[in-house]
Length: 397
Image 1 (tube, rainbow, N blue to C red):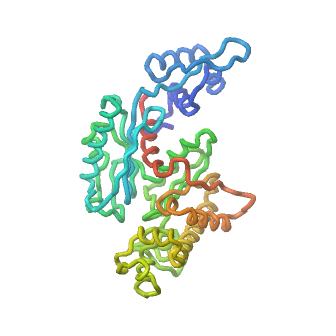
Image 2: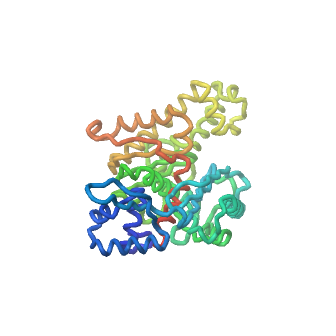
Image 3: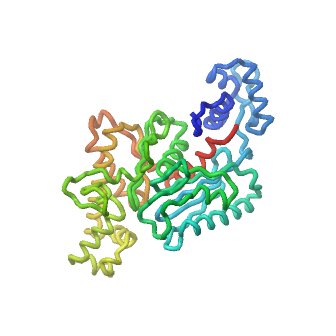
């Protein structure tokens, strides 16, 4: 199914198969799609004439003439992928084979309002195209992966939490991007985009059932079943943070659930817990040399890397709770691959190992059923890559 809801044409199916395989011969395509040889020959000739594909050499002989191998033409089009997150944003530039040609990343500080962000993106886009000597008309679009909640149909960011800058409510981000760059734009939540990107990176192994969990300022998740991202009736990627893991526990924010996972296993939770401990004494304030309300995640991370026992305990407890949350999701969806991303996962190997160990201990049917845990192939570049891939999949062929 195409992103616009219509069934793909045979040309689109052939093109995407060649793209995912890297190269393909006519014999392979005949075997894969079961269409008349004359029809396939005509289709390949048309696609070559249109610049969609090109011959890449000859394959090994099976007794007769060596077959022509076809590959996608990398210069057919280009795509931008934009990630909008709470800590940072990034812009990736890709050719039609989804090869990254450029990546730019910047912090989302108190000055990075929606207007400032889009102005920065437009300026960066121009610089990238100039550096690569590519005309704007060769760009097929810009995909956007953003923190939710979203209205994907309107291309709007609705009411995300924890942005440092003001103005991030009801933002028509796609319209703003289109007006600033001149490129068509599509919006997807960041967790879904990351999962799309990671699935593309793992396309040779073809995992069909995947779970992605992002642990950072908040918690976000995405699910793939039978190779397709699962969209709910509303776009609330952060709802996983409201999973209750302790019935009589605290809540992180007004309106959140008491005992929710985000109150134990998020950057916001770690900062809140450390500030409370510092107010009680016990060496935190002296160790960090900060007033309790000045303690930030970076300070906690430094204490962790220096081996400060209370910091180690704080992160270990958060990781164990994250593992419990992961086990709950795994027991419900039974994915074959679980990808973990986000600042907490990348910050320290011990946090990642503690989380997946706790998850394994609580997975039903373990060890008979053992999902594969990974940090993914793309990591920090996953969202921007998946956002660009979304535009690639919607490209007219």
